[in-house]
Image (tube, rainbow, N blue to C red; front, top):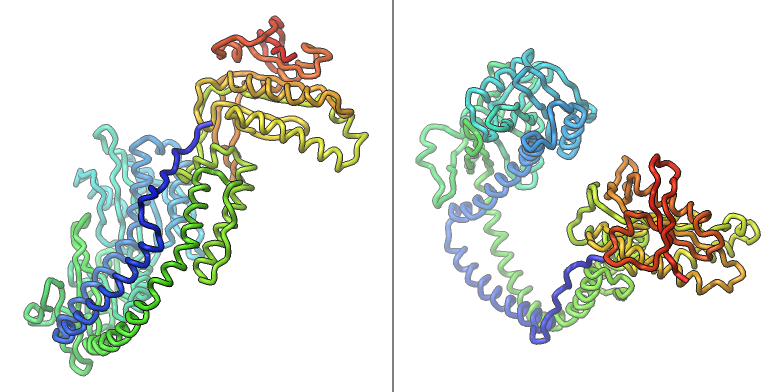
Length: 603
């Protein structure tokens, strides 16, 4: 069985965690004390504008990153579907699969209003979010949609394969303005179509409102500096918007502070430092600071992301900073006293956790000791969660092939269905049904558990995968999930081991003859998924053939306490012929042609 790469163990010359934590925490506390005291003197000497610069740069960066993060799913959707079309993973000739891809990507990003796949011939497939949140997929022609027609004409005119944000469009049927991200699709140098994802500007405004509440400021996005693309309280229904005029001007949204952003002389009221912004004095309202950053990449007309807030908030920040310096000094001194003791105490559960994690990485789940509880809440929660995870993995590993569990732990991904040559085994106990009628339920359960335990040990010892237990038999295969060249030899060795252990119980009063069929062939192996569940299994005619060979043991090995029948394909895959008896050609149920079969002698 293929194993994960060994986890590298720490060298004994490495410093212990307690020493590292004690030195690091203590040293950082001392350094932090000096830095805090030094910074307090430096900050006290700075004026309000310089303090604003520091705070403003952080706020502006945060606002810009949060807005880009909010827009990122739109770009990702277009790239996912557009890239799939370019690579041939999706096709315009398969609207059902294409619609599912659009529905899936739209469901994962609630901020996206719609996504559309457009062909140059006039056909389009669109997924859109209705008012109740449901996602519908429809097809039609885009030539009847003026805004889409203009967008397609512009894409063709540009002839640029790079994706980009298009101009705002007002949709009369929706009563809202949208911005779209278009991803042209080219294949072999020809224009195949485009994928367009849209966001409603009023929904973007709702996001800005939540963001502004976090920052205690008013966040906005301007388009070409004089039109408002998104604003927290912009009611589109109250504005005179149209396809020719999709965005309102600064003075129309009812915010006199934002309307005065470019008032005369603003260039001379810039904020010191590298920060992009300026200040204005609003009559009767005080002084306001405006911070803004231009988003020009992938946009023909740049977007201006900005935030404004009252200057009085800076003075409040300065007073809070002074208080924080005093409290920080007290806290640092107290922390310095407790640093070493705390580091030593924290190191113990972390070391235990690291050792247990290494065992989990090796999938040595039975060797993972339960982590003890801790008086530290986070460590206690981590220990409890880790113990629960290990218990769940133990159960998981009993239901799923162990090699597949290793793959999931290592990569986070299962195995997609693929064609591969495997060797498949079916086993069965002859007369089990009749015997079970004479035993009570607990005796039958114990008998089956012993038998299945023996089968599982012998199969897994040779790197096999138990697909399923069926009544009193098992289906197993070799060659997946991990690829092995000698899958047929492993299956034959496992069959010998199973027969040997089974024959060792021949004197038991409940002993039953064992039948084993083995066949090698090309099958489909991987995760077969439905909406309700996913199963790792193999499919194909070789699976049915192996099952039929197990049934033929009854007539080909009459009276044998452990009969094993191999197909010619399995024998041909062996590097050395074992003790075989040529049974000749036989017709197998479900197949038109006969199969050349062999009996494996096990004594």
